[in-house]
Length: 292
Ligand SMILES: [Fe+2]
Image (tube, rainbow, N blue to C red; front, side):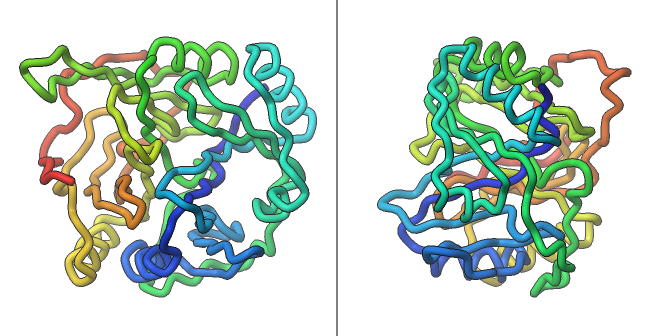
């Protein structure tokens, strides 16, 4: 069984209008109306990568992980069941909304919802950004997620032993000198993105620290920074370059309260030539935290 991409996210929000504005004017994604009032944000040839649904709170509702075939899908289901995690099949309405052949959901050991799907359904029509933005997703999934956890060892063990992920690197970081350092574990699935999923010992009521999307040039990052400023969006981390994945990026607050990292230049890995490492800092330069 292997997960080959971070395929989509489902976000819950009380304010779809804010997400529509933010998704189109700031992120530069295409807004498409989905079933049951859902807002799709399209960023490549897939029909959507972000599904924004109305809810009673702001949250990352689910992270969607893709496998390559129906056989891999059943293998994934068996693996999750074998780990004594409760597998919930998608309902017909949920499957329709996600535009896949089938999916199941489960809670990871940190209590966060994930979905495994196979067979994305799309018109594979050209992505036309309202801001001229070009995203980098080809063969890499749409980006990455950094999620909060209070039991990092158990959670990382689940993703590596059950879900077939590999640890890419780890980081111990002192945020508050009066407290012990926090850990972040970065993991990859079966594609070249340096990390598709990471867990950090941080609390977050939305179930997400940040999602990352990647664009094809530093100019696209610069244009996005201008749009952040023009639209009054809160910048949370200044421009900087990460040590682990080489990404040059900035972070901003989304209408749901978690952050989006917007970057370029992420390394594409050959995992046969990788040594797991620990860094003593997250960034070569920049990424100054400006508060939430
Ligand atoms: Fe990130």
